Amino acid sequence: MSASLATFPGSIAANVRAMAAIQGITCTAIARTLGINQSGLRRKWVGEVPWKTTDLETIAGILNVSPWVLCQPRYDETPAFASEGTVGLVAGRGFEPPTSGL
Image (tube, rainbow, N blue to C red):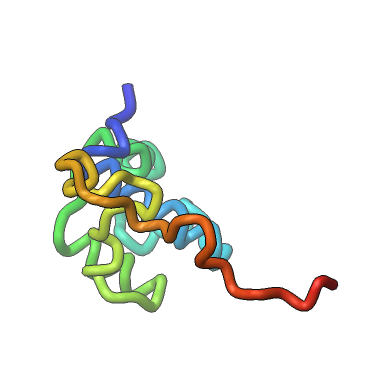
């Protein structure tokens, strides 16, 4: 059973998977660097087991990002304030820049 992406471990796992995929880094390479087997990494990879701070620091080094970046909410999650009746983050109709018509 995998954790929801709305959970903190699930969000971190999604960020790690996405950034590793973009950079072409395999889960085997990450597991080897962390000194764990692939089964152990898979449980973290799907958000079933929380990431250790030391794991995040090591993975951030591999991905050449700050550990903070790995802990950020996913871009497609609804911000907490959106449910409080505030205006959305997307500009309304009529705010698009003019185009050349090409």
